Length: 304
Image 1 (cartoon, rainbow, N blue to C red):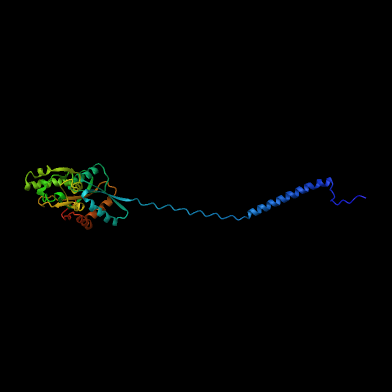
Image 2 (cartoon, helix red, strand yellow):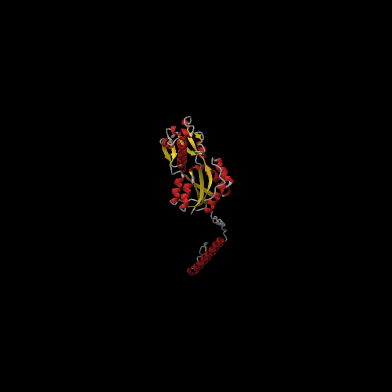
């Protein structure tokens, strides 16, 4: 009798051949099911919301171009016109005022050569008339007057006490003849020669150490002690303070300076230029001029 075999009965070769395809089908089916589960899980995954793009910035509003007023003026007007610019700004927000202060003859040359400006204020009528004849400025008006005075250095204040003492100075400084203060100085010396001696002008000019291009240069040399005496405008004295002594020139010998103002033809801002003229001629403008040492505007002055 054969012993009992406890192991599982072995299948026949034919059965094994039939079982292999079945196993492969089951494995393929399981692979398909697993792929379906993975895809299903992937499809159910929650995506984090993407942040919303920042709102588009609106284009800035185009800025208004800056408005500019260009004023050419005699050097003696520096302080007065500077104060007027502050007054002008109160009614002209956003407008900048640019100044060119120099000797009147220098400014005339600049304008004749094509310099761009809206307003020209001169320290005499001679240069303004020349520009009007050349077609460079429009109708002009005298807006103020100024009084020439004799200034003496502190070292010489005890020696030069009147115009008659001027030839006693060792060094005198005056403006060149082309600048208004230089022309007025020579006219004063000519008038004084009638009463102080025919050679009075010659005696003064013999003591002239230098001739300057504008009145502020004359004042500076006397203030610094580089000259003993010179003739400037009364409106300049606010700058000199206590550095000079002041001698008034007798009215019968003096020559009062007239200051005209006009719109420059072809300027970039003629409307602003007219507004500036209106301010200068107004009671506010005239008040500023008088506070700065200029004389009151004569009511008889008419436009040219």
